Length: 254
Image 1 (cartoon, helix red, strand yellow):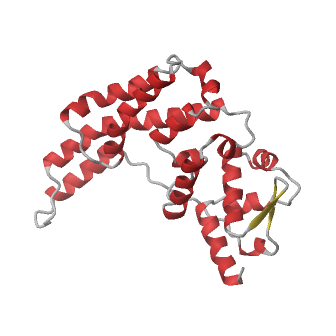
Image 2: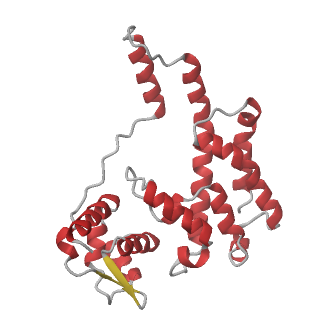
Image 3: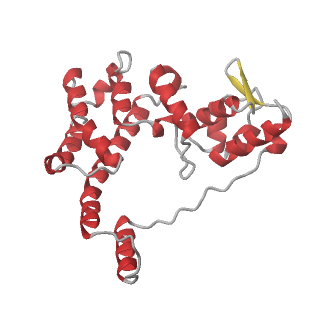
């Protein structure tokens, strides 16, 4: 690999993963990633993801299950501080926009009352979606907590491929992700849970143990999920049912 390419990849890597340098420094070809995860105090799946990304960038190699940073790469790695996010509620954002429009009569673009009302309406749907998807992600992590490599062993190739594309094209640099599950959505999470070899491990957590009914309940919510995630206004009927659909998913678990 050319030195300039190595520098570019190292910059991209540490921008995407602020603690990437710290993790790579411990990748000596002898220390297992589980030990590295424990040493740096991060989720093992996240550390595995970071090391595999380093491998794709040419910053590390993997042999016999152990990662080793590439020779001479340490000098190109920089410590990147995560961008500080301003914790501003959606209500404050809407209030600011509306007040700005009122104080600037010459502004040609005005946020209508309808748009503001719709935003308030969709907040409830988004909250239900956010809780549901993250609940399922946490459940999957719990069910496979004893797995040494959940992502490689328990996720089908199509989902892995889609996530790899998402990481490449939309790396979500504004927020540090726990692991690859952070790139999955409701349909992916369902597919992971109902996979033939995975399903039995979820049964102790389920009230609804009939796989087909479990699958149908989630499928019913996916159209509402897609509309909400892409900021598309739900129809009156969908809006009335959206919270029920997401609540019914949670109710299927103990």
